[in-house]
Amino acid sequence: MEYIYPAIFHRNEDESYTIMYPDLPGCISEGKTLGNAMYMAQAALTQWIDYRVSAKLG
Image 1: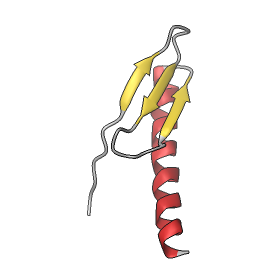
Image 2: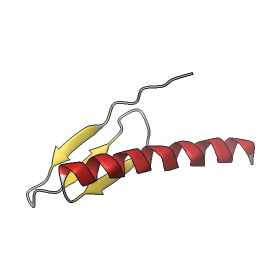
Image 3: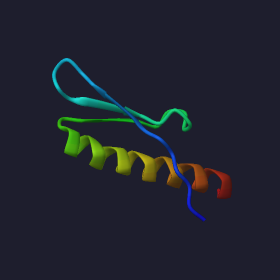
Image 4: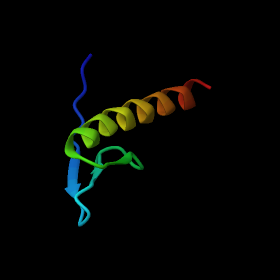
């Protein structure tokens, strides 16, 4: 099964990025560059899902 979670990338005044997933409460990250922000978004999503799955099983 495949799921799609849209991410919002907000460019900050210092040219860093804040990433939020509107459908996943508390799933927020940051990156210094757009490339780094994309990497950090993937990591945040993975960790958020892992946490939610383990919380339901544990």
